Image 1 (cartoon, rainbow, N blue to C red):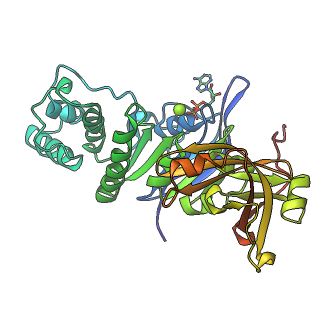
Image 2: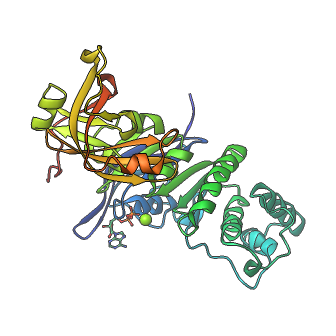
Length: 354
Ligand code: ADP
Ligand code: MG
């Protein structure tokens, strides 16, 4: 069994009437790449700050490894934090920046030099040590910030939306690199993001946050294929929700169901629906919108049964003209019954209030 790096037991943090974190139980394993995903204001940063020791919990216990650190000050916890607005000193070289923390801790010069050089190599900045921060790109500066944390060899690294300031292309590259670096160094990473794609790309496990609580804690694949609630289904990827009368008509059952856009076939109204109709859901409707996205096309269909559904298909054989021609056409959507996910119901929009 893997050891536990971080445990939160019944942890709450209230700011006046705001329950930023609400009775949270959470265990993060040693060496795990663990992400906290959720909309703005859902409590992610507060959880990181509680782990780091920058906030005191209103209730509950925090352990690092076996040690209860609930009352331990931040500087005495074996964790480091990397923020989005990384503070690197403009008047120091890259190497001096990375060495800085070790200098403060009075680590001898030769060891300092060696560890800082190693940390720069780990973040793919070997050879950049003598540069000044203004001679680096945004992505490189973010790597310096990462090296500054890694040089301390913490057991746990906390990262609060560290890629948020980078443009999309660079962010994608850094996602892959950061994951590689984490594997190499083997440090437990706790990564906060509001970007579902980022979380799905990088994480071993993801906790989806909503209003200070965890809606679901699972692997990326489980979150996508088996969302536990409408909130998770809507937040992680695009999803179509069928419930009430529409579910009765289209699925033939009562309940709340999720179907992903890429699982839904789209054909002309005149098509022959396959003989194996028992294993299929069939829903006629009208195309209301076509969004051509280069690699794929998203089509919004208003079902005769009521709701609208978004379907998504790669443009392997589809031209933009063929896609756009479907506007306002009648079509039939089909999907496999076993691709439907039934949600535990009813979908509560409001939590029980104590
Ligand atoms: P996230 O990082 O998911 O965006 P936060 O943890 O920053 O969320 O915030 C969670 C909630 O707690 C929000 O409603 C926020 O306004 C509130 N909050 C966070 N820090 C403070 C603070 N220092 N004082 C008062 N309210 C705060
Ligand atoms: Mg935040």
